[in-house]
Amino acid sequence: MKKIMNTADTFVYDMCHGLAKAHPELEFVEKYKIVKKKALDRNKVSLISGGGSGHEPAHAGFVGKGMLDAAVCGDVFASPSQIQVYNALKLTASKKGTLMIVKNYSGDCMNFNNAAALAKDEGIEVDAVYVNDDIAVKDSLYTVGRRGVAGTVFVHKIAGACAEKGGSLAEVKAVAQKVIDNIRSFGFALTSCTVPAAGSPTFEIGEDEMEFGVGIHGEPGRKREKLQTADQLAARIVPDLMEDLKLKKGEEIALLINGFGGSPLQELYLFNNSVTKELEKAGVKIYKTLVGNYMTSIDMAGASVTLLRLDDELKGYLDYPVATPAITWGGASAEALACQEAVAALAKALNITPGAFTAKAADDDAAVAEEESDEGKTYEFEGEAVIGEKINTPGMGKLVEMMADIIIENEVPFCKADRCGDGDFGMSIAKGFKQLKADWATRKKGNVGEFLVSCSEIIMEYCGGASGPIWGSAFRYAGKAVAGKKEIDLAGLAAIFQAAVEGVQETGRKSFGKGAVVGDKTLIDALVPAADTLSECAKKGCKMKAAMAKSAEAAVAGAEATKFIQAKMGRAGVTDSEGYPDAGAYGLGVIFTEIVRRLG
Image (cartoon, rainbow, N blue to C red):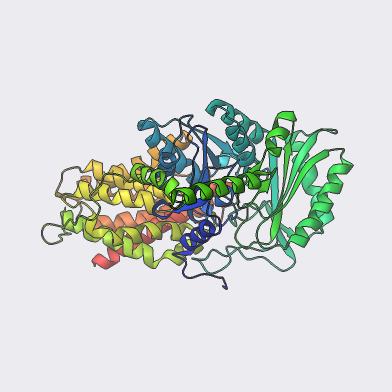
């Protein structure tokens, strides 16, 4: 792997700092990885979006006049945490409310929805739309629905214009939903991409092959095919898009030829020629065309085609002035420059720095973002660790620390095991558990329950993608199940595991109306058998370590069984996942087995 980088851990931070330094009208809130406007208009609807990094210029490149007020940046291909999104909602809260524009992926939906619930509890008005323009996903029964891909760019643009023109939250949401209802996309890949933390391509593909219907996270496509010409691809993709959109002859569209990061601009323009000819042949009128990298997949070669049906309302919003790092037209940049010059002149006359005008706002934002916490306070375990027929609080700390070490050691193998998703599973959970170890001294350790809940706070914030809500809820519910207890027996350990199952399922119910069950091909397929085995062993009076060993074996067997089923939930549901175990279930099997081995 050859990349311009420092380390995989600092990759996203370094990139966001670079973006903000190149565009001084933006600022990077490092603590929560939020790119936002420096000067926020609190009298208009705020727009926030975001998702995993690796799609640049999306999403931070669309922060600016006429588009987003803030973008929340997750790790590469991993959703930002609910804590990140929650703080973005607080930092951008306006008198007219906030609209979240969410791509329809499990992790994004979980984290944005949970963050909205937290913000609403504080009186912040929040609503959301979910972009699902990818027609490569035909059957939505096996996932949260169609994926949100490059069409998201048009949703940002048009909703941003409506907000800029003074629309209410209901009006901005309505026009955003109108775009979603009238937009369709389809992509193909010529190569895989390489996630920095993994260091190797997400999938292998022959020199004469292509993935037809690929996602933006390096997910394998609808099917593997032999390489085709640009004209052949256009002749296949355009009719499919038109059919799905029910687009008729004489209707008007906006066209986006979007690169995935690895194809040069000359090839994208060449492909635009092929697509445009097909549309003209079908009698479709093209009002506006965008060609370039707007929603990428790191360095993947390939492209996607997006069609947006237009009417007079949408055309007006599409043409409205915009000035962001990635899109500028309609004179907005001149307006921004004039504003900057006016500020600079006034600052000079008052003999202060231009930044002083935004200093108070920045201070206010920082005050809003900072939670009351015990940050910096050190908590020590009382006594020596005991892991025998009973486990005391320090003993639970030792087990969680073992789990963290095992996860960190298996970061790359867990990424490689994520064959049904986008290859980021190991990176996503390792990041959270690395932070947990870094913040170990500040975790509350008065009793087992308090300790597990305290761990959940770090896991929810720092584990990427869907792993944050899922693993964080598991720890939180587990802690609540043994609240106040300074030691637990086997029945208590079983209660912890059963509560973890409930936490994971409740997170699913809140986000999608359904919690995962055994057979859906998720980590539940390993966690439920592990929990049930502990419960059965407790009833039979088994010894602690023998029960833990049987529980680990049950988790491994449950994970192995997922090889033979098609995923019914999550991102893996959009691809043919048979033949590979679910990465989360597999990971639990490895973790539990290794803990038992280390305990001896």
